Image 1: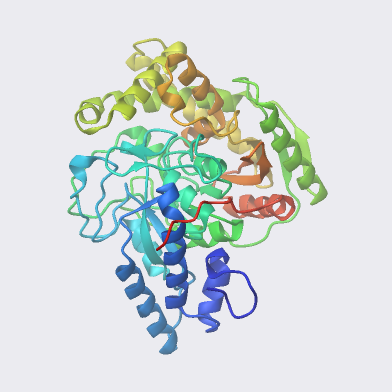
Image 2: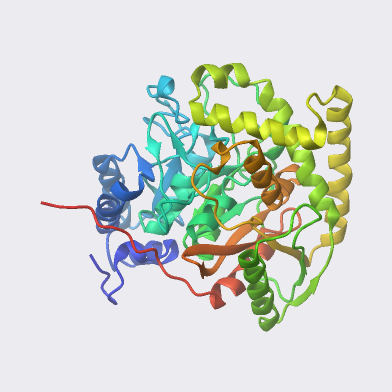
Length: 482
């Protein structure tokens, strides 16, 4: 199906184009839903990005959106736009399975706060995106739903834990997807699949699950590091997704009644940080940073290369604070998790022990959180209101599939390569992963880190990169018909 003004298929439209077309009646929400459902049917069998797809439900939502247009109602920003939600986030009438077979029947009675926000914004909820069990790997697969493949190369990870979301966006199954991020789970999958992924400032988007679900006393690292955020094919998709998902919610332990500004900033200072003293970037990663730096200079921004070892220190703290708390949850992971998550975490704990020892003490843990506060203050002082950091997304290109199951030595390399992913959650700052093109058949990209509540600055500078970077969709095998 194509639109009425050109030959671009509806599934290849941005969220903003779709919302505008539905609003001005260039096409209907039902036509949009049908086009995306056809795209899912065509591409999802090869990728296994979306699970629990219910066409009748999506079409019923779209029909309701069309009725609102016909009635002349005020239309919200994502009216009729297809969006996917993740299997570890509650959506009314769908299982919050976390990829765990024993929880396949854990059907939510209500939406999580961020999903309810997407629904209020008019989104047509199109399906659930796959993730690893318990969402604690940089790879996507589980015993309940199987493995998700990277749409560019099946031998490489689509990222994790929001790998299904990123693969679905890259393949054109949805223009926007909800994900969550405690160690790169939005930004890294976006990087691996050639999409855009935004991790908002801590407290902007509520992570509160609905009443009636099993009560979970969230560890401190989850409260201070885990956020929900949007993935999209374009920066504008992510901008719309963010402003739909922002949910001032004081029932969230870190929720804040604020919204990021919408304005377009002017000239920005960009500080390049390549390795933070952790590990040297791969040549392809260096080339992506070089490209982005050049493009930002062409766009009129002030670009300089700096050393900022506090990011490396923050990354090392991540492996102390998060993993020590994950160890307290291992009885449940051992009982319900799959072999992959157990093996991956065992090697991850071994890698962290190289820095913190086999048995970090309570004093180490307390001092780690104390140091975190100092690093937050130092970084905010450095960034101010007009400076961003340009870093790799990871120090390696997208990893080979199941690299975290290849033994402790390889996992130690992965942990080091992910320092740009780990530093940001510890500090609670916003960051965005932006594509820079394709190298050796795999997506490349960079990360931008901004001061707290400076999402407008991130989106503004990310657009300057996007405007200059070559973009193309992956070539996907078509599902057999007939």
